[in-house]
Every structure is written in C-alpha cells, then in structure tokens.
Length: 230
Image (tube, rainbow, N blue to C red; front, side, top):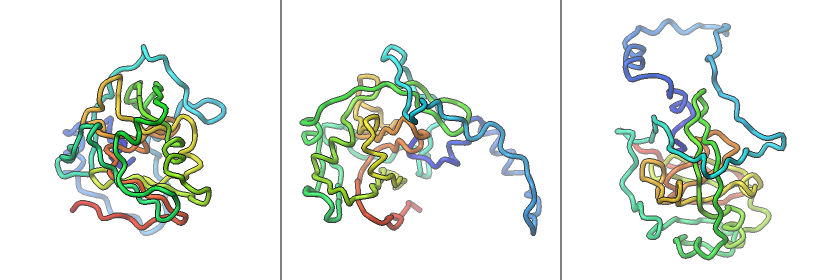
C-alpha cells in the first residue's frame, strides 16, 4: 500500500466496473471560476491515534492479513522484480556527507541492531482499514545512530522499487514506533507487501509506510524528484 499514491489508495472502495463506467462518462466542462462542490464522502478516514499522536499498539494475537487492493506505480500494478530475500537485500544509503557511513546497507548491518516487534493497524486514507499487522525489524532511530547521522540532517527520502518515494522529517522518523521491517506476522514480508524491507510509520496513513525500499537519502533541504517509470 505504501507504494501507491494517496489518490490511488482512495479508490479502495471502487470496483473495476465502477472505474470503467466513470471513464466512459463524458466529462463536464471545467468551471472557469471557483465553485463549491461536495466533499468526498468519508475521505480521508480519521486515524485512530492516541492523545500524544502515537499509534495504539495491538496484541500480537490480533494480527492478520492486509486487505486488497494493493497499488504499485507500475503498468501492471504489480511489484517490480527485485531481490525479495531480506537476507540478500542491498539498500543504497546516500547521506550526502551528513553521516559517517555511506554505501550499501545489507541485512547483517541491521541484524546487529536491537530487534523489535510491534503490532499496529495499517490505515488507508479511504474509510477501509487494511489490517492489523505484526511487524518485526529495527527502529529507524537505531539505524540513524548506526550510520552516525549528524543532528543537522533534517530530511530523509525513501525510494521504492517502483520509484515511488516519500520525504519525511528525521525528527518524525526517530519516533520509537517508526521502524524498518523485514518480517510481517512472523514471516518474511511477501513481495506484494513490500519485501525485502519496508518502512513502518504507524501514525501516518499507510501510503507513508513505503514498500520495497531500494534507496535511503538524507538531506538538509528537500530533494529533487527522482525519475519515475514511463
């Protein structure tokens, strides 16, 4: 889900027949001035957060599957073919001079860090939750400390295998609930759900928990947009 755009996720309640019917309807003329229109019903769905803004944790016994649809930025809406085995992952890390370590992040680098498991609701922007999931991995804060990230690094960009990306403040990513996960419900994350490595930000909508990370880039200003597939 995190590999899609929020707009794409908002289609969760529509069937292919609905979408085809909409595409066949002639578009009305675009107004040449600002006009009032009805808001999209039920969107965005409220995130069930705690008073401090964190996500409520669930017991591991409540964990289950993530519901469809899953959207990728690819012509067939499927996960691109990459190395899905988390033990063989190779993640490009480019701190742009803002950390002591740079190069390729591999699983043994993460394996040395404290392993954590947390169970959260994955909430779509549309009014249909995707599922309560147990994620296992490491806290992003521990990864940042391992890299030797300097305090002046303000932003981090995660790029997925389909070239979808998100930019997030490092301060947000250092929240103890934010993690880089390679296990989903005690099994390797399936390719369609973001293998080999997925970012989990449980207090954001699910599209921020970006799937299939291939690059991690740090910066002080915002970064230019990476090339997207045709």
